[in-house]
Image (cartoon, rainbow, N blue to C red; front, side):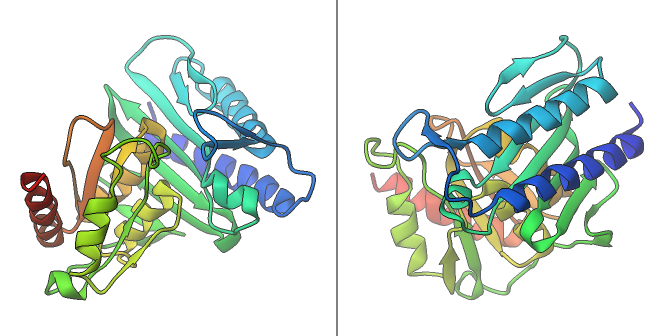
Length: 261
């Protein structure tokens, strides 16, 4: 697999899909449906975006498998698999809010080796190839490294079953909020991770994510000098992403909360 060629193809594809999403943002007649719960949404633009991405990937990389949010797994079995979130931040999009992204990753033996996150409304293209660093619009990125937890701005999110599952992030949120500078909740995990990679967020934690939420963003963070580790194994993908020092502070706080349950 020529990863630099694949990066060029996927970057252009993400920009093309993002342009379509941008044109449709704010439509009053946008078709919106629910999936696993009343707050788990899919729009017609999610489906159209996925169709555009999958058709292109199948044409350009026919030997690769694909895992995508709306369609699930498809394609031949093999060591390479594309992991696709065609529109990360669907609730934002359905509301007409301009915070959403296209996320595409290539995994080799279940490890991300290429990642692209494109934010259409800001025209920000985050990209990484394993071993080659992370970039935003071609400029190398570096995670932040704040001197204390109290000076950090962190990001997080909440699972779709927040109203029904006891492990819903509220206890972590309530505790950390009192010990840091601020929390931001963008509603788009891929973009949250991209912001950690560029240092505009000092760290990020979330639970109950799916592979397409994190596959590209995790590579961005690690290639920008950060670390990403799981903090529990009973809520799908549950991770902390930050610089090595900030990660230790966040992880210690989460562990303390878990110990007091």
